[in-house]
Length: 181
Image (tube, rainbow, N blue to C red; front, top):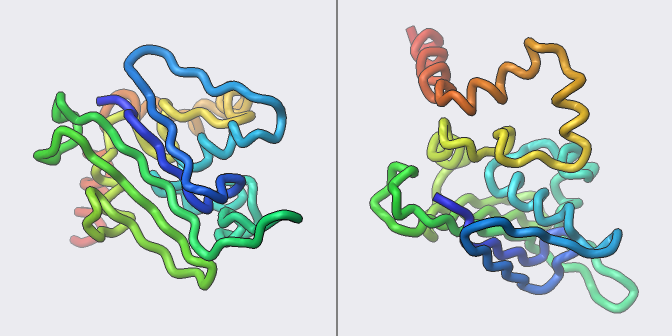
């Protein structure tokens, strides 16, 4: 499984629909300060379920919607879609490509979709459990997080290692069973 494409529309500095294609190997996004490089990684974390506006460098979730500029008016919807190659069936879906989309409207409504079908945030979270992909996964380390990870207490780093070892889904199901009992 690998990231094939990200599409951003109305998300932070991406007022217009912007599509980035990725190929196998190493991909680097470079540009001057203020060009939106961090907004790309924020978009990835957001579509994977990030709920903290502060983690996305905003005050509230509406801050991720393009707010306008001197030359452009604000938009009413922010949307990010990730398309993943699933030829290896790392995701438990019978599709060779999986597209996950998240939308937020200026009025606060939000939507989640998997392959254009409405779903819940919980469905997206469970889909990516134990894959190394997720809003807190080791595969996405945002700006300033390396120092945070290295300086954090060992108990707090446990989540990264649990994700990498593939036991998060098991622990989540065990916790849910205990709560339901």
